[in-house]
Length: 475
Image 1 (cartoon, rainbow, N blue to C red):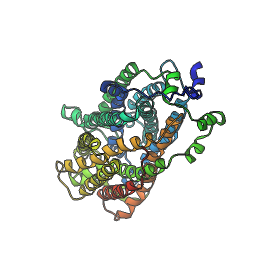
Image 2 (image 1 turned 60 degrees about the vertical axis):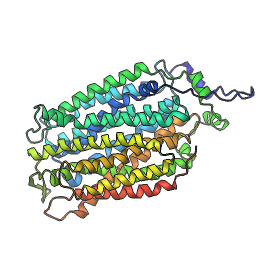
Image 3 (image 1 turned 45 degrees about the vertical axis):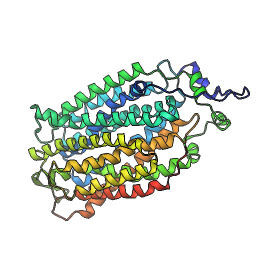
Image 4 (image 1 turned 90 degrees about the vertical axis):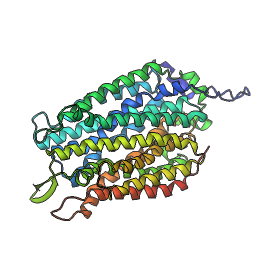
């Protein structure tokens, strides 16, 4: 942090001179593109994580009823890390920029961990030790992804005017889904070109391992590109574009903590957060239970009997080619979701009524989730996941557009970090309850009915769609 930090709380507002704050100028499409391009690489890492974590831990030996518990750590780390990154970057000025140093460090750590996580079963460790190693690797991976992801959202708030924010977040949504598409299909493509899709008991298939390696390489290259191309506003100019109100000048002296800022958050923060709760809980169940759903309903994967703590359970055989092929197909289905999301992201800006398209998108996505219960053909599932992509597109673009239009002044980064809690908390709650809910549906001595968890995800999206109309936008 350099000597310019003191300028953060000394805005050039022009008060007393009859001159208002400067307006952020319009930027070309390609400048907006460069601002978010690194998000493409970050999202590849996130896609590889979300599509393969259940597969990795099932291969290591995890029970389906405990599978959701492995998903608690990622959002837990997100809710801790992102507000800290937001708050720290609000007060940081370096020769490399304000947000970019955090972006680069987060990406570098993510690259290192991506080379370790898929090798959890390759180091000759016991099942328990391999799971602990995998869990710790997952914790560091998700933490670093969160550190790298948050600055992109903040830079849009810092450097894009109100008129172009919708376009900027739509570009970010497009790059997000394009990165997801690449990350999701990697295991399928590598298996198609001859890299083995199966492995000895407790070992992750080479097709998955190489997917993580290639994803790590793309991630660091994309982040380097954004680091070179984007020049953040220097402190004095930033303060002219983002004048600090008298209340915020007092805050600078009193240094309010995050809890105090949370208590003063605009109403939009909470109402959008309510919608977020149901949306992200739904997608947590998608990431956790799609593999088991597809393996049973579309691939007829064989099962085996396991005895855990004296209790016999029926689970899919993780060494079977059908089970691992289902894992690859999950990536393809998630890729279809990403394509559907990209196409729907083009439609969203055509609607002037944001709440209408927000709610409609969630209803369409909920119908997609429910339909997976009735579809048993692997190709017909394309329709289901294309519909789910409509909800995903709205979740990526609309909440941040609505929220950032209601945020002003020197705590934007902190509020965006706190808003990440509306993404992380529902995932934590859903992951904590997932095993219990699945257990309620399970008959003793039978395979856990994971398709019902996707039906539950659809119901959650329907509830979220109804909650959209509670939001009162501030333009």
